[in-house]
Image: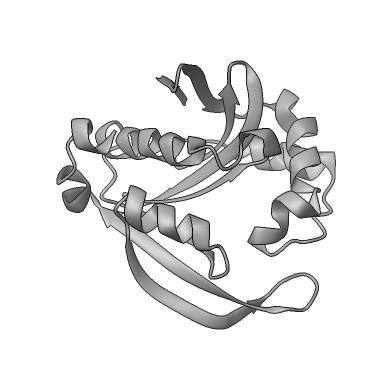
Length: 183
């Protein structure tokens, strides 16, 4: 998969991860500061071989993608397809590129791709209930609906009880936002 677009005079490029991306992903995934929101404040603590295994699973229904801005890798997206329902996760891992609106713009283009190229019926995601910024973006920028919140439903790797909230947008709801309004 490949996506190219320009936003705020910067060139974006998103592509499927390949084996040579494994060291970068290993660095990001083992960084507790990057992974804390996902329940891994100590990082994933995985090996390069496990990262390569994850990359090798890329296929039509599962993608691990690397995000670039101006040829600089800044983060990753993953998505899975289960009978037309696509679930995604995103991390802007390079702190220089966080809190600039890039994640929102990237997700708008991902949604456009999933609905119009992959013919998704629905797109879903979940986030830690403490991640207020992500929730704001999902509801107010991406027009997703909050469908459920599970309180104290999982334990992170240091034993803290955590809550998650779940979002979705159907193809029908997405189509209410034409490209000029949505993108």
